[in-house]
Image 1 (cartoon, rainbow, N blue to C red):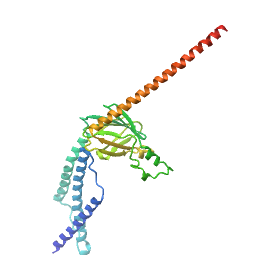
Image 2: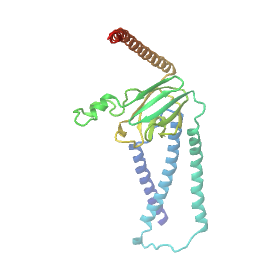
Image 3: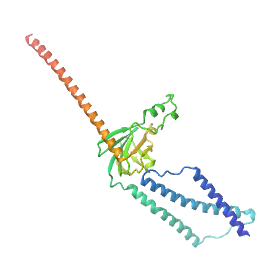
Image 4: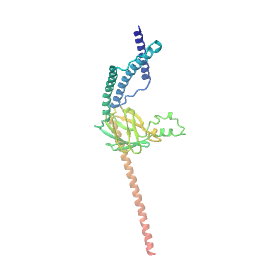
Length: 305
């Protein structure tokens, strides 16, 4: 009868802990799987490890609370008097080691995969500044800066009179998005020009520090089209909170069209710059033609004098 009561109490405590734990996970926020193979590997690894530690927690707390309830002093229980048990020490050392090995094997595989940046189909250089980003598409020859968009920048000013809740994607929108193709292995080369920054887009499953004088590498392979937002994750100065990142993932065909459009804009800008330079030269020539006769006449008058 006594053993039966202890079993009933133990099962009741375990059920209460399981329900409480499940309730926390059900209403709380878990990690998101992301949109890359690596982010999904991290998500699955997180779930496996979370499951293991949850089971351990349930068993440990069940044993602890059951013992507290059943073996309390008010019921006449006396504390056991013993020094140690070699068998118990071996067991409670070996089991945690095995659990750590089981968790370490997939974790090591994911970490190795995270650092393997070879086989890239395109390269993007990311440079952090206070407080904006520069993106350079190395193969495509495209480069531009990306900063907080004007609506968010106006709304964040003290005394602007603008309710930030009326601004769509407040502090998470930029003037120029980083456009990337899906189903393409992309290598990122990250550095900074002034202080340490950190480039972080949660949906990609990683973040990397951008350090002056150093180049860090990372890679991604986006499987779903969409818009993915992030921020600088390193305290980099007064406006650290105003360095958003917006990645727009499009199909490879749409990306090629975007590249052609950008190159066309660059060509137009170059031609406009060349035309401006020609106009400056022509104006300078005209001014020179006007100055030379005047200078010659002045010289003749001085010679006669």
